[in-house]
Amino acid sequence: MINYADREPSGETAGPPRLYVFIGAYGSGKSEVSVHFARKLRRENPDRKVLLADLDIVNPFFRSADAKEILEKENIRLIAPNDVNSNVEAQTVTGEMYAIFDDEESLGVFDIGGEDLGARILSSMRSRFKDIEYRVYMVVNTLRPFTSDAKSIAEMASELKAASGLPIHGLIDNTNLLSETAEDELVHSYPILAEAAVLTGIPLVYASGLDDRLPKNWLDKTDHGIPLLRMQRSVLYND
Image (cartoon, rainbow, N blue to C red):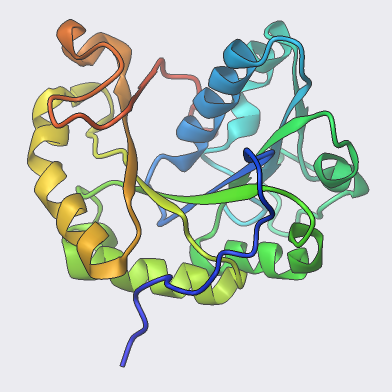
């Protein structure tokens, strides 16, 4: 029997999170979400350092490192593996990746790629998570084949949790068709994510979409009351 739910203690210490980890199936859009969440942290915490660690060492095509220029303009430090954007298969994690654990005054975002294979990177860092406040969010695009219904989302969550050894604290609805996206995708995906939340015990914490394609009257929430992350396209394809 698959253990979908994360019902054991999460392991983080008391207090507001200092590290946010984004995982998800291939094509979920987690790199774009990671970039914009880092920018959100920067806006909300202008006096604190913000770091974005691109830990997608498996898939070199859609990466948060693509947004380097945007991040640098907003004084967000980008940490990436060796050979980033070189399309090599064996990229390595540098010692810089551990800066977020050591600098107690900073806020961090981890962009984890490669589905369960990429999530194993987190497993190798598990001892580091014991003394830091953190949240792990799973980004979901219901228009992708492996997360198209509630059961599939639950199964992917179980796989990612097992591979990382960390609990998943929230789901992010990033259902989209890239430039074709409008509010309809998020409206239609909401019941699927709501069912997945019940099935897994993992709450739906955010929805996200391209700012120019979302209704202006949604402001900072969808019409279902889900906090909204409004984004501009910043992660491109490296061919």
